Length: 136
Picture 1 (cartoon, rainbow, N blue to C red):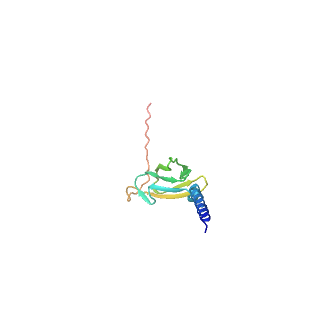
Picture 2 (tube, rainbow, N blue to C red):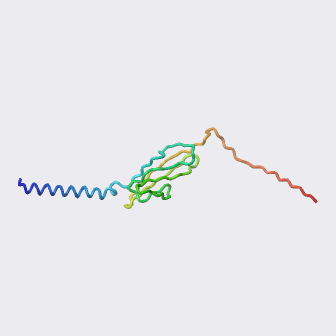
Picture 3 (cartoon, rainbow, N blue to C red):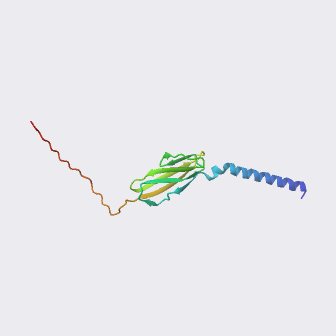
């Protein structure tokens, strides 16, 4: 094989390699899509405190919602939101979407336990007695 053909083949291969690597970096967001990483709390968490903080990171996302309400992200994609739980089983739905229209969804299930498991709630009934005095 001639040296000119070897040099031409090497430069052609190098050029194709550079184009492929550049294309991957440009299209990486489209190839991977958005991701949601929840740092706290983990799904299946049980607590007795009704106020919790959900924190994590939305990667490659433009819009991030928690139970349908948009949550602001910082420049690195971090989010932090405080929620008040209802007693019993709670479901939080996280959704991240990118500018290509692709979505990532994650569900967190949390149980808010009562402080006393043997507590029996009785309905509250109020009785009032009205007295009036008439004087002439």
